[in-house]
Image (cartoon, rainbow, N blue to C red):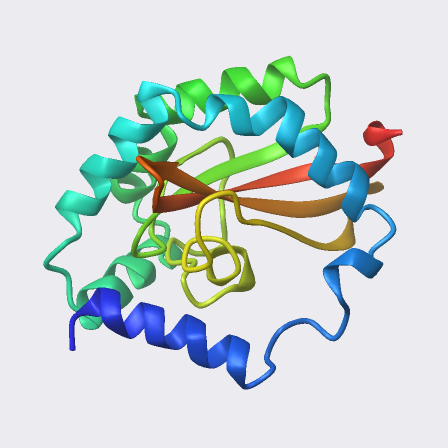
Length: 189
């Protein structure tokens, strides 16, 4: 079974077995405002050539990876391999995301783009791991289909109330990756 098929099976099993959060997304008090913000201010630029070309290139580069290869990349990331981190934090996509974050007036606190394998492609800030396919942010967007948005619960971070909002990235009506944004929910009011 290919790595892509294993990841899709993992995502499907996760949803079927009920490993989803114990709350319905619509019940979250910030979900409507966060979704509206994403649809108006973020989704329009997810089709920018900088985003699409970076995700397509990453999908090509990772097409032959086995799960052991993905695990090795993730372990290198966790071990703070600087060259690997620089590959996603110092590229054209990262520069693009940083500009969008800065232009948000503090609403966006972080952004990171993942490819079809759940691996980080470009990001504004550090993440604890490189492989996201084992997490809801990827599982509830990429395998779901174009236009999928997942709003997670709010967590306190440095005195701010931050919700991660994830969105599928599509090209020609087919998902190619996903993106996660940290959203300061107090700035949505």
